[in-house]
Length: 157
Image (cartoon, rainbow, N blue to C red; front, side, top):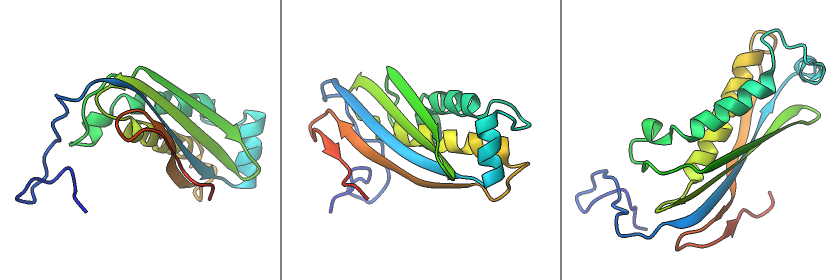
C-alpha cells in the first residue's frame, strides 16, 4: 500500500495537485449525537436552556467545512462552493447529514466529515449542562463523487 502523503523518505508532505483539472466533486457524511430522553424531549419542545441547538449546530457545521485547511495541515485550500446540513430528531439521537460540493482539484470528504463532527460538537456543547452523557458516534463518509476515482457509496451497515 502506498501512502500519498509520505515522500520517499517517509516524511509527511502536501500532495501537489497543480496538474489536476478541476472537476465537480461532492461528498456526504453522517453522524449521530445520542442524548438522554430528557434532552431529546427538550430538543423537540425547543426548551434547551442555551437556545436553538439545531440552528447553532447547522451554522457551526457549515462554518467548519470552510475551515478544514486550518485544522488539517495536509489538506488543500479549496473552494467550498456548497454546504447543506440536515439535522433530524430521532428517538434517542440527533442525526446529522452534511453534503459538501466543489468544483476543484481535490475532494471534499474531509470537509463533509468536519462539518458533521463540529455540528455534533456544537450539539454536545449546547446540551452538556443538561446531559453530560451526550455521545457523538457513527461519523462516516457515505457517498463521494467526482475526480478520477469516480462515484462511491458506503454499503449499508
